[in-house]
Amino acid sequence: MCDKRGSKYGAVSHPVSRATCRLRETLRVWGLLLVLAALALEAVGCSNWFRPVEWPELGPQSEKQKSPYRVYPRRGMSMARLSPDDIVRIMQRIGFANEQILELGTDLHNALRFSGGAEIAHKKDKLALFVADGDYVRIRSLSGTFHYEVSTGQFVSPPASDR
Image (cartoon, rainbow, N blue to C red; front, side, top):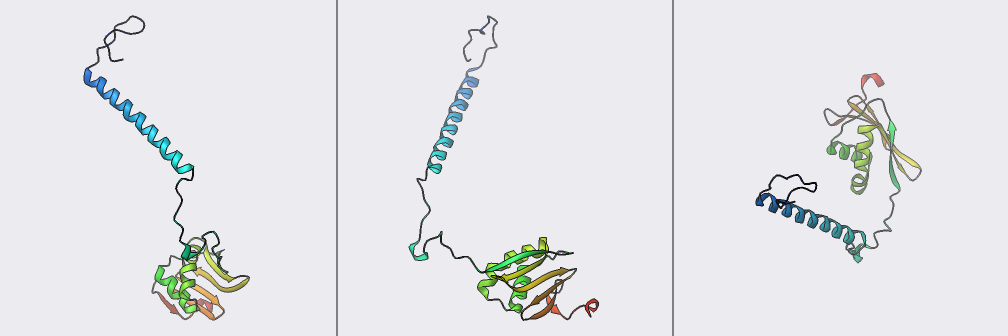
């Protein structure tokens, strides 16, 4: 209370300066305005007053075609940290088109990094199998078997342990 009347029980309260009273009132008003603004924003956002722009040239957004290509993570003994250039290089060598590389590259990267292996399938057909093995990524695909050395960023002949 900002007056100097005393407390509710008859004891004398400490006098409060006029500046402190103004500060309290200002904070109270700003707090009330903040709460009202938050409620107004929630009411506007939750009642579908605003909808995203729809582009008729792109067709309906809810009917996006699902790709028949999938990347399935497979458990491996080691993980591989590949750069985006490595992923592109590997997928181009196997024979994937640029659109497929864009679509599947991130999933392949994450599968090799976190699971250590990956499989790319088209519907139910297996197209390629990737396994991280130390500094190498071993790739078996319909177009052949490849070994990619991560440290040099090049395809190499199989390491001596495979022969």
